[in-house]
Image 1 (cartoon, rainbow, N blue to C red):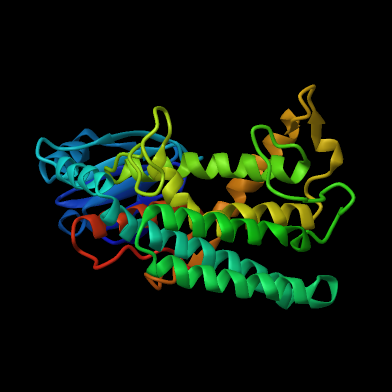
Image 2 (image 1 turned 90 degrees about the vertical axis):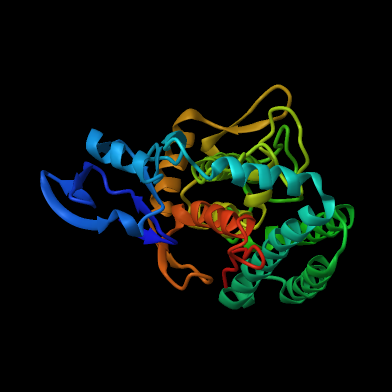
Length: 343
């Protein structure tokens, strides 16, 4: 159980949520392990198959406390809300800002700044930990280029300009991504980003991890009452969760890329885990996909100190916390959206 920004996150299995007086009462094996006054809570999010008493659900509706249910893997299942709820006002604000390119740019440029910063930090960590095994001069050149792109992103004045900066920065970053791969180079050779379909094992892993991250980001946004289909950088397209794609930009290096590099460099994937289809697409075998998901879920349980909140949280909660910070900005509680910046 973790309480952040007046939201309670419950990920422990076999937990039952009940009402005790005017408190949220958390029960495990019929024993109370925590009580939290409901007047201190704006929302409750559960991950897994926790149950909730009718009395608690009634009290949450009465007090307009969102009770949101996610699967243990992070998929959005549903949300219980009261008769009067601020989500309508929040979404109307989201739609207004999305229609205004200048306002959209104010949000998107912080997300892209975060993405570029986190890309820099991933490369710096590789350089720091493996100086003698990588092309240090080349990586330093790219880090300098990313720093220039980051400065340009935070001061850019249009979405088109921002997209150009982001594209150039991504191209630079991927140009040295192969340097971060230290094991099984004969199998996991990265020559550049390709997708739809991925044409090599590294791109297959990246595409799968990005797909998982997009799904979890969409769930996090729906959980706080935002419309995951209406974005700021990514514009509306039928069937596309544009806001989730916006949110995951800053999360790609710190969650997806970092994870893919870890399982490659720890030899947790190998050549036998992939198949090549007739159209040259490289995909994970079924058993390898299950193993990937198991490792992904395990990684999400690890803790990190959130640089903005200065509190420890699980990796898996990062999309949820960032979605919550975005709502704080949209409601006027923050002067700017704070992207997550991981050293």
